Length: 512
Image (tube, rainbow, N blue to C red; front, top):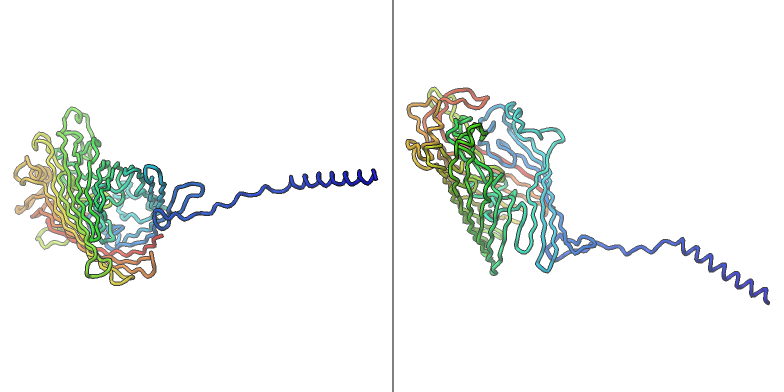
């Protein structure tokens, strides 16, 4: 009996030992998988970042477009080889772009903290094969397999504040796109690619809000400050760029009303125009006399824009009218505006004038001018413009927009008064030129644009569109002059004459 008991106890101990050894070899139980959760707080497309209380939305679009008789993205043939119409110009220009957006939201005791960023991965042909352009290094990305990444918006929003690169408080709600595809509809401000700023928005209820901000004008909101004491380096310009460093931000703000019938916004901007020196070389290059030459006193300019959208039109569901009007004094970018820099216009055409080689029309865009010792400081340039569009939906698949703009740039004074902006500009421009007997000088110019776009959306978020647009330059010079034009143009007699051009843009876009 004693022996049986020992055998039973020994067997039990052995089984317990074996069980412990086998248990040690078993895998540890895995944690439950944390599945992605939908975040419905901020609209469709948001989900929680696993392990956090932050919601994120990934989006963007892929766009392919081609412009005929123009620059990429619907740029009219108003300057460069396109404006000259020479054999270096491209008859068409194309761009392929994928935009990626990242939008995050986190609810806090102070409200929602938001971050937003958009990067554009793109390739386009960059235009000219003109050796003069290529040697200047303006086409470094024109290579097979090349391309670049552009940063549009990068900002943080918290407790009503916005910090980073975003649309200015001065921008209209639609920026430069009341109904058009192209990025070159002028007549008002366009901050669609963003500007470095700090701004605060207050909501008053019933659709009423107000925003105030500070914008960095360095790379976005300056055109030219012309020192007319420097001989022009171009045949269609006067003076030389003479802006100094950035001393003050643009002070901007708006009051906006959103209602069922549409919206209304009034916005204002203050912009400092400050020069470098009285004595500079062409291209704002300093010399050994610059610091002791003095400088004109800085001047504050500004602009104001009123924007109106009317919805619920009787013409169809979703139809609307968008229109805005702008006046500027020393802040011409608010009127002669694109999604990039403000253009100067140089266009050539036919002529019926005896002895003339061709006709030319040009307009030099500037915030102000000064002629050291003569004009009593900086003379600010005035401009105004209006633009808008009527947008109509034929059915859920087809839509059409009719758009247009008009604007004027005015230098002030008269051509015979050298103390005025116009007189100082003309004194600089005519220096060294052979002029016709009927020549008269006036740097003022008007512009007008008109176009139509039709879109087809066969399935949701996939749109094919075609846009035709025309640009008209109404320049105010008259007569003719012998000009040393940019190569390949010859040194010849050119008649001053109004110019125009037409472009066609076709696009395919998939939003996601």
